[in-house]
Length: 199
Length: 199
Ligand SMILES: [Zn+2]
Ligand SMILES: [Zn+2]
Image 1 (tube, each protein chain N blue to C red):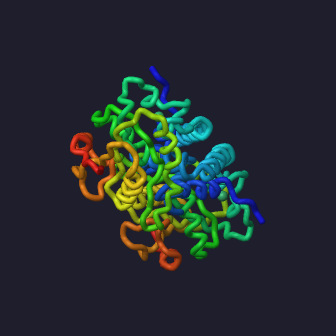
Image 2: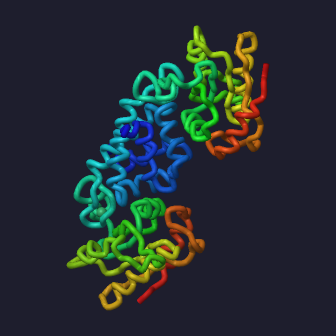
Image 3: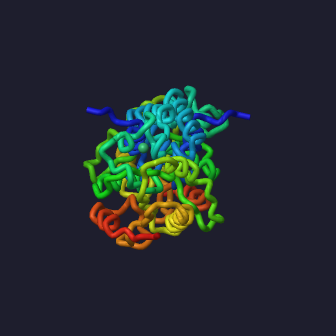
C-alpha cells in the first residue's frame, strides 16, 4: 500500500481543530502551502513551542509556562476571593472587564448534562486541593449561562454546600445562552457586581 | 518588555488559517493544548513534513512530493487533452467523477476582477511552458462558475485565441455561483460531457 502523501496527511491532521471538516481542512492545507508559507512556518514554530512549554499553573490550573501564572504570582490580589471559570479565555475576559481583584481557578472544561453529568472534564480534585489550607473565604462561580455552565455551577454548589465559604454565582445580567468569552466588558462587570448569593 | 507567552503566540499563529479570527483562534489553541494533545502532536508532524516535502508537479503544477504527480506519471492518460483547474482539490473532485481521461494543469489561484484582473495569482508562465512542444490538442477550461472563475476563463480564452487548440469550458450544468469542489460527481460529469466550445 502506498503511504499517505504529505498533503493528505496535513489535511487529515487539521481536522483536529474544532469545527473543521474535510472540506475546510483541505482549504486550510492549500492556503498554508500555497499562499501562506511564512505563516505556516510560524504556526509550526508556535505549535512546537506551545507543546513543549505550556503547562498548568500549580495554583489556578490555567495555562502558563512557569509554576505560577502572573495573576497567582501577584501578591496584591485579594487572596480571600476565588472566582471559578471554565477556560483560560474566561480569565482574559474577566481581567479586561477589570471587576475582580481576587484570584481564579480554571476548571479547563464543563459538565455536560446531556452526557450523564460526567465530572472527568473538570479539574475538581485540583480545586479541592487548591482550597485546602487556603485563605479563601468567598467563592464566585463564573461559569457560562448555558446548559453545561448551569450543570457545572450545580456541581460546584453541591460541592461547597457544607463547607464554610460564601458562595455566589454571576448575576444573570448576561444574555441567556451567552458565553463569558463573547460578552462585552460592561455587561461582565454588571454581572459580577450583582452576583447572586447561593448560600 | 515581556516576551509574548507560548499560548498567545500559538493563538496569534493560528490566525493564518482562512476564516479564523481572534476568538476561534483562542478556542483552537485551547482545544489543541487541553483536549487534543495527540492531535496537536500529529498536526505538528504533518505540518513539518508538508512544509519540507510538498512541492509542485513539474508538469501540471499541483502539489506533489516527487517531480511528477501520479496523474502526470500515468502514461495511459490521453496526452492530447488538457483540463485547466484552479486548485488541487478540483483535480480530486474531477478524478472522483471519473469523466476526464486526459491530463490537468493547476493554476493554483484565480483572477480577481474586483482587484484589477491581477494575473500574478495564476501560474500562466508555467502553463505556457507546459504547452510548448507538447502533444496537447484540446484544452478544457474547468474554472469555477463564480466571478473569479469567469474572469480566469476569460483570461485563458484570450491567451489561446490565436493558438491552434480546440478550447472549451465546462457546461453550465453546475448551479450558478457553484464551486467545483462542492458539486456532486454526477453534475460534474454532465458538465464535462456538455462542455461548450469557445473557439
Ligand atoms: Zn495561576
Ligand atoms: Zn502533475
